[in-house]
Image (cartoon, rainbow, N blue to C red; front, side, top):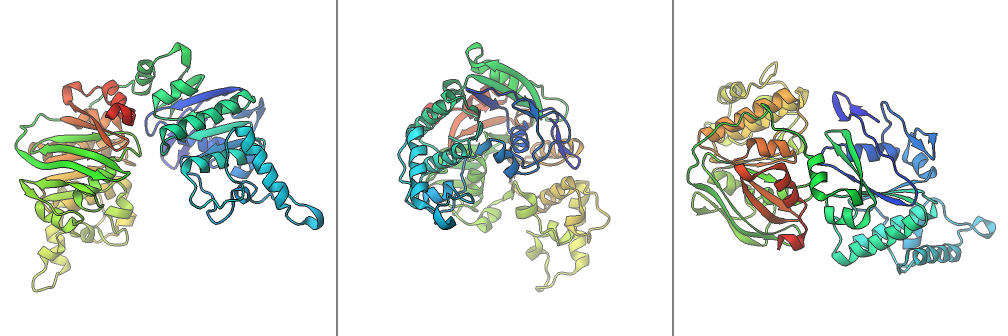
Amino acid sequence: MSKSFGPVVALRSGSLEVHPGSVHALVGENGAGKSTLVKMVAGVHRRDSGEFLLDGEPVDFGSTAESKAAGVAVIYQEPTLFPDLSVTENIFMGRQILGRMRRIDRAAMYAEAERLFTGLGVHIDPRRPALGLSIADQQIIEIAKAISLDAKVLIMDEPTAALSGVEVERLFTVARRLRDEGRALVFISHRFDEVFALCDTVTVMRDGAYIGTRPIKETTVSEIVNLMVGREVAELFPKQDTEIGEVVLQVDGLNSAGVFHDISFTVRRGEIVGLAGLVGAGRSEIARAVFGVDRFDSGSVTMKGNAVPPRSPRAAIASGMAFIPEDRRKQGLVTEASVAENIAGVIRRNLAVGGLLTRGRENRAVSPWASRLEVKTSALDAPAKTMSGGNQQKVVIAKWLATQPDLLIIDEPTRGIDIGTKSEVHRLLSELAGQGMAILMISSELPEVLGMADRVLVISEGRLTAELPRAEATPENVMHAATASQEMAR
C-alpha cells in the first residue's frame, strides 16, 4: 500500500502478510513507515493505492469503527482509558450488556470481564476505577476489550516501552495465549531481544518501503540491522574537516527521575556532536534540560568553564547557548508574526534605543541573517505562516544565529523539509562548525547523524550507552547501542 500527505510520501510500498496463530514483528528505523501502515490497517487513514485483504477478501476501512467491526484491534504504547470509569465500563464502552427493560446489566458485564481476564491468565478487579492503573494493566484492559470484540488481528505498537521486566513477561504470556487461540498478532518494537523472544516472523521496512521478511529462527540481529540501515551516506552531507578546540559545553551526571540517568558529555569548539537514539529515548529531554527549559534533579551544566543555573533559559542564552527545538511551528516560531519579528525575537531587547524599536532598525538588523540563510520570502514583513516548512526552519535558525552563540543545540534540524533544503541546512551546520561554533545535533535520521557528526552519543532508555568517534560510528554500532536495554546500559 502507499500513502502521501500532500507532497510528503509517508509510505511508498508497505507490505505485510500476517497469519493466524503467529506473532509477526514489524521493525524499522524512525520514519520507516510502520505507523502509517498500521494506521491504514486500523482505519485511521485510507490508502492511495495498493491492496488490502482480510481473510482473503478486499477491504477498505473508512474509519476505526469499521476496522474494529471487521476484527482488527490496535494496542498502543499508552492506552487512553476513561480514568473515572470502572475497568468493566471501559471494556464495554458504547456496547453495554442490556438486561430487562433495556437497563444496563452490570452483573453480567462484571462476570464477562472476569471471564475475559481469566482467559488471559491475569487478575484485575473489574469493579475498580481505571484511575491509578499501571500502563501494563491498562494495556491488558485494551486487549480484553479487543477479545470481547472477537478481534482476529491484534497490533501491538511499542507496547513494552513503559513496562518493567516483570510486566513485559506478563504481556508476552498473554500474547502467546492469544497466538495459541489462533489469533494473528503484529508486534512493533525497537527491542531486538523482545522480538526474538516473542515473534515467529519479522518484516523490515525502510524509507517507507517493504524490505524483506524472515522467519525468526533463520535470521540474526545483525541481518535485521543491515536490512534496516542498508544505505550509504551520500553528498547530502557536505561535512568539512574542522579543527576541534577547547571544551565549550560540559554536562556532568545529569539526572531526571524517570526521564534520563547519569548523563555526562562534552561538546568542543568546532565540533558537531550527534545525539542519536530511538524516539522516546530521552534525547530531546536532555537537550531541554541543558538549555534550562526542563528541570533536572542532580548534575551540572557548564559553559566555557562557568556553571549555568538550572531552569533558566535566560541564563543559558546569556552563557552563549542557542536552542532550536524539534517542533519549530509551536516552539520556535510565532507564525502570525513577520519574518523580521521572528528573527529578532531573542535580540529585540538589544536593538531597542530608549525602549523603542523601529521597524527599519529591526529590518536592518535581521536582513543579513535572512540573506545568509537564503530565506525565500516576498518581504521581511511577510507572516511566517505563509512560508514553506524549509524556510520556517531557516527563520528559526536565523533567529538563534543572530544571538551569535558559542553553542548551538539543534533538535531534528531537517525534519519535514525537502531534500534540497536539507542539504542547505547541513552545509550551514558544517560552515558554523568550521568557524568554531560548538554544535549539539539531535536527529532521528541515522544517515544524518553519521554524515554530519564528528562524534556520536547514543541514548537508550534515558542512558548514554555509547560514545563513538566518527570512524567507529557505523549504522550497525549505533543501532545496536540504540536498542540496548537498561541492563545492557549498566
